Length: 242
Image 1 (spheres, rainbow, N blue to C red):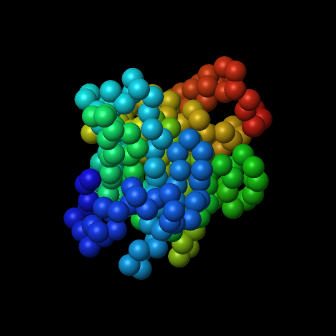
Image 2 (cartoon, rainbow, N blue to C red):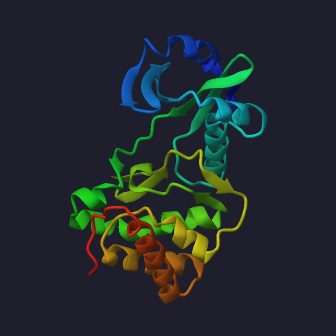
């Protein structure tokens, strides 16, 4: 168990979490992993319990590779340090059985942002058009901070308009590369899972290129190349080529 020193006062509750998780809190996501919401000492916390890995992966996560919970926690601290939006990490816990990792838990503050980027594919509006350039600047800032999200997809980007400004946060951050410069092509490749009209990507590329000092035409070419490559290999895309 590792606790963010800022939240040491929650130690007693965190220590009981593996026992209490099944019977307390509100389920807000329940699939392979489960996420529950808790209110503790005036704080709204989200706890993600990562599924118990298969035997081979239990061995790998125990002896050779950090658990998903640990990676999420450390990546979250890195993003917060570099002023990149993500739910603030509070703690992580690893349970072991027969010497191998079993369940692991990530505790964060609940994000104040309420909307998902997947709205782009479900309900296009002029308001969503206004988010393109702010999202591009957010992404450029993340990449300039040497943070590359390997699953930068619509379901992992939270956003909202607060006090007249668009704000963004990334979630599901266990799969990231941090501390190494992000090239133009790596940045473009990371956008391939986004699903939107071509006009979205052209506007995005223009703002992203300006923020990072790249050529906007080259940036747009690589972004569209990787998008098309991803969605045309057995995946059903919900956009048009206009």
